[in-house]
Length: 292
Length: 254
Ligand SMILES: Nc1ncnc2c1ncn2[C@@H]1O[C@H](COP(=O)(O)OP(=O)(O)OP(=O)(O)O)[C@@H](O)[C@H]1O
Ligand SMILES: [Mg+2]
Image (cartoon, rainbow over all chains, first blue to last red):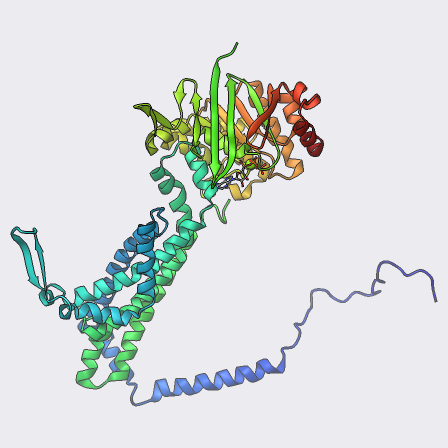
């Protein structure tokens, strides 16, 4: 045999037309899978469109009805208020958890442990039934006059109970999100800020928080979306949010499925809007990350 | 003789029972360049950080000119200063870190402008003009709008030097400014430091760059086990070390 092997492979004498190319054929499994998925979708579609129990005219009739829109408004309000309070509480808890004072950090950690370990539905029922534990609330100066006194049931309306339960629950989850954000900032950043003469507050406001936000925004967006859906749970205490509003309607006219479709459609509309906002915020706060 | 700018008197510092600094005395005069050498773990970074009170010393005192740093005297005791007063004192020192520590969410220019505007309440327009001059002086006039992520290590460290200079510090503290850099980028940072030294900047530099110490340092201080083992001119300490520890260290670094 020849003693020398050429280092470069031989060039083809007549190269093919390099602009014409054909993709490798798909594995037959993909065709079978596609057929199964397609048939399933067709069947579901058939039920959804043709079933006499899913009356699309009823969906159309109630989609923009006053009661449904009021319920939607209440759901959005509940979500906004509970999120605002939850974020504020979460920031407080996060700072407490990172505190060098043991009692403070222990208290915050215990709170988070307790709330995250118990169902939201139980919190909602608890606050709704608070009167069973504390029948009356009073603010009084010890050995002095009573400034304020009220029946717990008058004070804690179903709506207020819902707000309290959702906010306190959210605070525990946001505490973890905020803590993660604060810890994600390199300690060298605080050092550099301090060395430049920034006070503790200036360091937090100008250096730590802007960097923590980038980490905090995506999970916070997910929390808002979860909250919007979780707020449906307060329907169990007759709080007139979106789900309860359609329940009231279908308890009268027995059009259960179309009205659940109405509620779902609205939840989808709002969550989709929230995804868009989240995407925009993520891009805005990744400054220094991608552009340059 | 030139005026003393920085005085350390008998500085002690322990971490969890381990004494890292065991009585350090050091004076730095106006315009002097002091290089601090020593093996890993000898307490060089800790010493630098006690100077601007990033790390409060357990014993001893730091003076910037006649000002006691970090404490005020009350009834014969030293009382630690409040955050606000401490911040004002720290602003008089510039510090350059091994890992640059630029603010990643701010452009190079914004990094330099931030502290003068926030801490010294300088007029933003003037601060920006000054920052552009400083960036030009470290050779980065054309990178003012770049974010740190898009700068090389050498460029980032030069921005960090400009950022420290923007506060017009009385002393510049460097903690191994070139140790995190690729070898081919070390020169550009040392060159900037050389020019600062030539312009009369007072500098305290922790470094393993023996060549730099030899060329630029007015004085070399060798630290080991939390004490100053030997000090003198670069020629004395580097060429004819008297102590065995210094000799051993120098054979390792070279
Ligand atoms: N915050 C801290 N907590 C506990 N120990 C520390 C802390 N900072 C430093 N030390 C310890 O103090 C000693 C001196 O550390 P220092 O960083 O000052 O050394 P160095 O001379 O700068 O070393 P290198 O050349 O590796 O940077 C080391 O043993 C280190 O582990
Ligand atoms: Mg060090």
